[in-house]
Length: 279
Image (cartoon, rainbow, N blue to C red; front, side, top):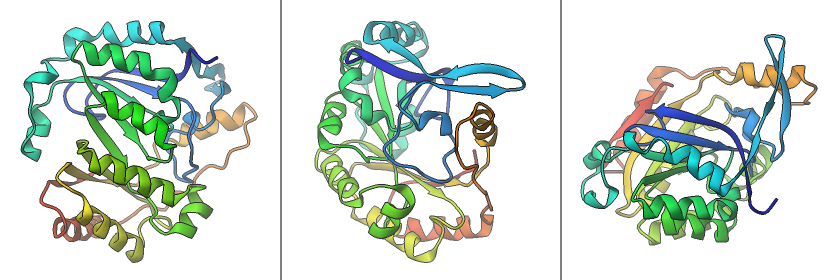
């Protein structure tokens, strides 16, 4: 299915996945396995059964590039503004950007080749494009994104090489390589830092995150600290009821005082807004 794109959901009128009013497309399939993932329905690159409230359904649907383009372009009237009118010279300009389309996941970079025609058409329409990514992908997929994407939301999770491999099943060298390319190209970036008890909240990891942010070049617009939440529990349960073997996270929670201290620490390393987000 080389011309097909596997989508879990299309959310319209979103305010949380980029600037302005957005249409967010959740792509199915992920390159890592975060034990705390709040979107478990997006992990596997295949259609999956679920059972919720006694009703059976499917996570995932195949779209051709033409079908997906038509799905998102129909919201064009809500994407206020022409992206070419905006020249960001100050991080505070982020909130002034027009709405547009956000591609999320899972890991949306995994389907960049299949998605390229959609990106090209949106770009030609001067519609603002954002992606949310963990950056665990091959460089070829990132290169496609760099041709069309206006804003990157980049996760910073576990920055110890062995723990990254053991916990996330990710290659930290690949992550750093992709991040380096992103910075060298001057791609506009918002850093997202999930703070998860027992995984990313230890002092060593927080110091590594601070040092990494301090190395960012002039393309960083904002830092978002994401507080641990359990909003994905019902999705895990719906998959398990349909026979999928998947472990439900044991969320322990993090203290607000620690997040406040973390924010203060990060602000010493960057000259952009640092926010604590409680989704």
